[in-house]
Length: 470
Ligand SMILES: [Zn+2]
Image (cartoon, rainbow, N blue to C red; front, side, top):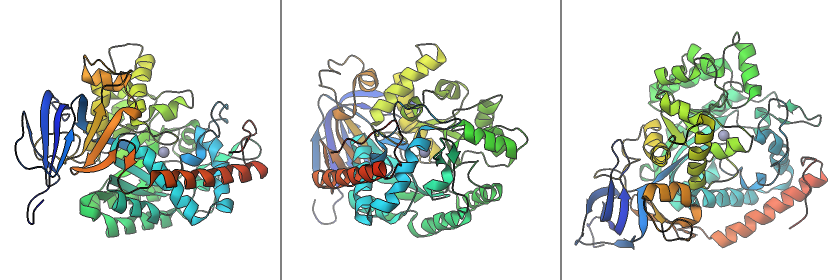
């Protein structure tokens, strides 16, 4: 690139699914990205290129949006509590939190930073170009990663910010939580992040507000959160109808209302709200979500770990906008697309829906709409040059009759060849540009094993799980 010239990236010869409101499939075309934006899709681009990617045998889709994760939590939770029956009214995470909390005694700040970076490696290797992240614990390490690695992020600082305040399994097997947590201080911190970082790093970072849920955040702070969202023109992201424990707390606080009815009652819902899970819906909940244009974030894998499925197809059929997320524990977004389609068919009792196009639309256009981003979720001139490129030559997904079905039903994260953000390479065949993946894996693994061993000796592991060493 000469001085004063724009940066041009060309992805040659792939099959392009344009996404957006009216998606098209364009075969054997060149995608041209100039100065971070899609400039053209044409048969044979002959102009200058600073970066060329040969994408013959590949499918190009708008950069996938992983609409709900908690940075740094997943690696140390893997294997802790699978196959263990849930506590009464509880969720999978209630079982993992005693070990997460034990980390305070064992892990250094360097350990925590390495685990967070390793968590990010999974999110990026899982196909995401935009990550919607809700942070428990300190935020500085994640902000540094956004700056250094180059992904796009919508970010909130969750309040209450202490994992102990959202409930965990106590010694008697019942869910307990640490009281005395300053929830208002978390909101203040989140607002401070918005003041300081919204639009940072060439606008790759946007800040939203992140109240944890209707059971863990007092009503006055939910109302205040909504007021700040309106004043600042940003959205709020929270867990909703996640488990029966939440259902009972909200019901007792609000004259038997469901969580959805309660948030509607206090004027919280709206197109500026992303509500994750929405599993325990009753009565008119789906109609309320549709009427208020509230966005739902659907996480099939996380819910399947709890032996349950959210009513994904009912949301779509009821006119609710839906995004897709991995949440915690695994970040293979292709796997979540597959599970959203397949578990959606099982729960809905019909094979025709949800289909491959519908789940892919949720992970692109639906998520972009939820984030208020007309520049994401489609590959058309003027859109951001964020692209996920999937190889369709594996023994599992080739030969290709229908590229979207090949992606959703026959591919996995291992088939992701590369991803681009603003036309720049982010993930490339196992490599993350700007990260020493091998060194980070060693450091994060060593720290997790140290934590598991100490937690095992300290009696914080679930009794059904034994630590067997490295
Ligand atoms: Zn979550």
